[in-house]
Length: 233
Figure 1 (cartoon, rainbow, N blue to C red):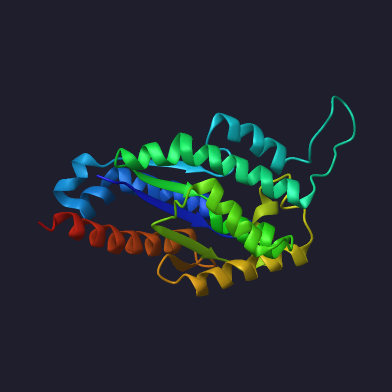
Figure 2: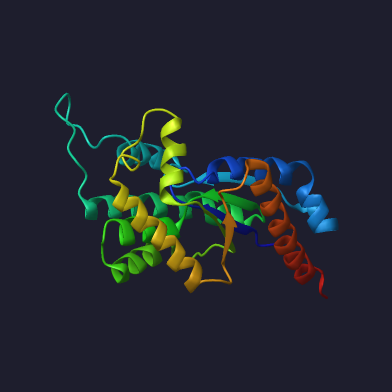
């Protein structure tokens, strides 16, 4: 039985990581049994993230989200935009082969914090790199593996950044100028318009509980649809 890949996306401070964890706990507690009936005993749910879903990815995550690369004790060296893109692609290629494909093949439901849409939004719209090149790199890194469902937590860039910066020290991406984050938000908006069957918009400006309930309802619908297909003779 092939598993499912469900991705949580959004700008900085959108709440996607919090909502992924809440969804994970709900699915493990009762959501899977509610939605999948007799198939529930065969299913398990696991969470992962990009970058950082593998041992190699953890090193790449530290490099990408901290201040930049260092050579011994010298001043941090800024990561160039194309280098950044390739580092994210390397993280994804390892993640797909080491984690995503094996877990999907074993029938697991995977909740993933960021995937290919983030690269298009951040490196394409945000950094201004060529979208065709990014699509090609995503295809190479994923081997064609797409999400079954992407939950986009839609929060305006200003609100998201305020939330993110309340957490404490900003990472390298959060430190980018406001115009960058606005372009990233526009990127997610364009992606949602282009792929309405795969990407579902969630109003991330609502309370944490309201967002969680909205996500629960969407997961119920999608998992029930998937279950009905499995149940057909």
